[in-house]
Image: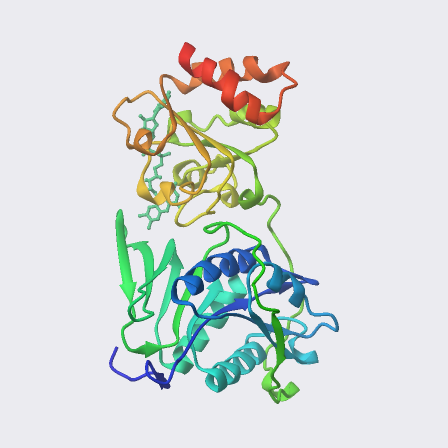
Length: 354
Ligand SMILES: Cc1cc2nc3c(=O)[nH]c(=O)nc-3n(C[C@H](O)[C@H](O)[C@H](O)COP(=O)(O)OP(=O)(O)OC[C@H]3O[C@@H](n4cnc5c(N)ncnc54)[C@H](O)[C@@H]3O)c2cc1C
């Protein structure tokens, strides 16, 4: 990067910030996931963790941030921040950042936070690592190590920013776990004011629509179908219903129109961490694996014993998915047991039988 950032590594304060996103009157799940990860990173350096909250609410949800490990919430409160407008949010965040000069800032890779982070990176003349699949930190110098998959194939790149500050990254919902963690010291609420004016806004929001009908990031069980199921999701849906789960998919069935795009798992889909995922007719391409790598238990069904998916599975079932899924449906249909019992007992037995 040719140009220098607006503040240097030497001027940066040793602190990690998480930009908290507010939806109605609560902090979003991805913000809590980032606080949980931020807490771990901050602990490894003995740095404080701050949640930056831009809000127009009378009762901004600062307490939740404290429950998830923030030492401090920095609140910028203004009526013009009530609804997300990239102009006011960028101005408020930019001025706060320039005032406090944090070393690291993490954002959820949601539509609004992506928009905000990108604009801030340009104004601050720093870099932004988008859609990170993991984050680490170098203890000796506080350099953030961002794991990013890319270059079209199965390449995992580790990206570091040596001298530009702040070090910024976006992470998609579901990549990290939410872990409640209160700090030893009493957390602080600090207010910072930025002079915002209606003339800062030059866009007009006419209507806001949410198209997400299903949220795979919160599903405890996912039955995922790939090209190997030939577009027939009906048996998978039956199994998902029996286990109280949802169906998901790889990209080919989505591209072929067999299932909605919101159910695509992976690098360009959703990152989820269910208790159980059963992959059906899925080869195990890296682009898909990044979407399930935080799952507690992975069961893979594939008729090719050499399929790469088996390297990522806890239970490997070599066979025809069209025969195995109906057997699992029969097994669970009349069962009243809990999922964990099924996992430890019946599913195990079922898999051994095949
Ligand atoms: C930039 C980029 C981003 C991408 N993002 C994503 C993403 O977000 N998510 C994603 O999923 N992909 C993504 N892809 C595509 C990805 O690289 C793979 O092509 C895709 O995941 C393969 O899907 P699949 O496993 O369903 O199909 P295939 O790789 O074709 O595998 C099908 C599997 O089914 C098995 N099979 C066939 N018949 C049966 C049967 N009767 N019973 C049991 N097993 C059977 C076969 O042995 C095979 O292993 C992306 C690609 C690029 C380039």
